[in-house]
Length: 186
Image (cartoon, rainbow, N blue to C red):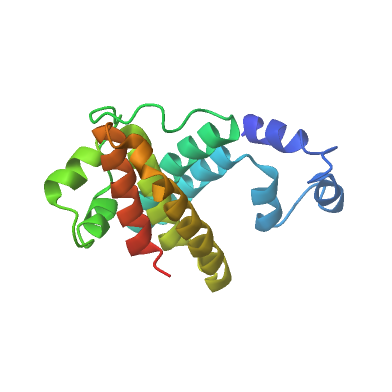
């Protein structure tokens, strides 16, 4: 609990959260609490709520959010996300819910799903895309994500001939394009 208090205290003079801290110095509403804590702490809090209310859905989503946190941190710190695409680098098994949704995509066999999702980076990207579809409820946000992801999908294969001698890049780009095109169709 002291760690959470310290994290919230750090926001006292923040240009982003300072006014909220001043407005609610002692007892702030839940939305303010969620604004004040780091994303990783929010994921832990979500898990706590899932356990407290015996919610299997929340517990499952907690693991999805943890995966999202990993790729979010990599992106935030300018890590090279697509620098290693070989199969077999995953740290844990993909969530059943993600694999079940992937199984619905025409043209992706079980063998391909298993192989592509055995790469930690691809697993994180696909899990992020799946989680967005499951958790975000705003149709406007979904529409904007669809537009941006379709542009990304097109950009990914725009010069695919550059990689024609690299089967690993070709296979992963094609897999990700199929996922994006299926889950975020125009």
